[in-house]
Length: 155
Image 1: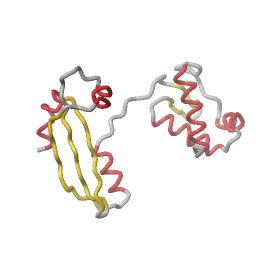
Image 2: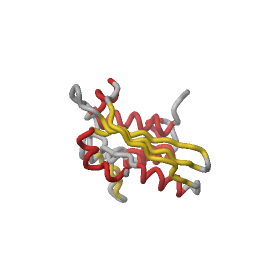
Image 3: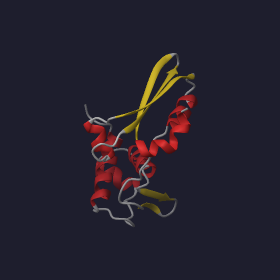
Image 4: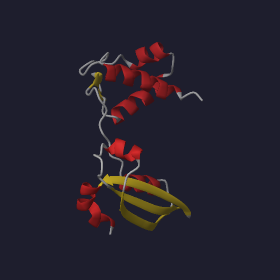
């Protein structure tokens, strides 16, 4: 399945920024020029640029244009609070079902992702909520030593 046009434009610009082809300080072409380059509408270009702004890669200033301000994406840490706010904003009823916390040996994939040394365990936090009466679960894995500082949040 093909990605939407704005995502294709975003992907191309993102790759150019991350590769250094469009370095920090580089002023992107105008929306009209980008529309012509990609053979898409200005709305499509605006949507792609908005996504790049949301990632912290570019900054748009009226009368100046859109400038590359970072050559790597900002690290966003998704939080349950942001997700729940989004769901509530959408008008969905949201109830907490349960929170389960345990200390365990991580899978190879989790160990690699968290760059854990051999023998280090992880804190698994599983939150189950009901969204519009349907169960929804989020599982988070934390370094065990990090979890000791945060464990009181889940009690």
